[in-house]
Image (tube, rainbow, N blue to C red; front, side):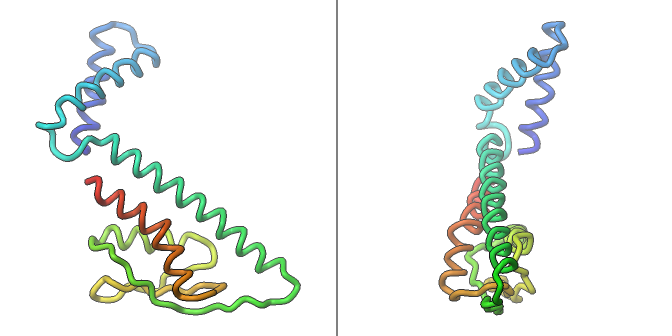
Length: 160
């Protein structure tokens, strides 16, 4: 992927030198032409076409921001209630992710959302230990993580 990005940028700068016009519009045009050329050369370049991976990373950021906003609203509801009726709890989340970087990314995304903290990962890397400030059931919490954050982390990992 890095080779493709670098090649795309080099070809874009080359386009600027060939045309003799050093404007942003001309750079963008050169970038698009270089993107088409990199796409045509994807068979001989290492890795998959990088735009797919870039799209999945943007999707991951979008899903995380949505989860972040929802978690902030949930924590705000807990804080603003006159009576404390939340039930904090520890639970074990079983993950299907296999690579270390995916597990670390998922753990960091879970920790960055307010109301949840990852305490650790098991030695076999199949379980993540989480503390939740307002716990409903293990199934609900697990389904919430699996259907949103783990799904997009897995998609980014598949695009390599």
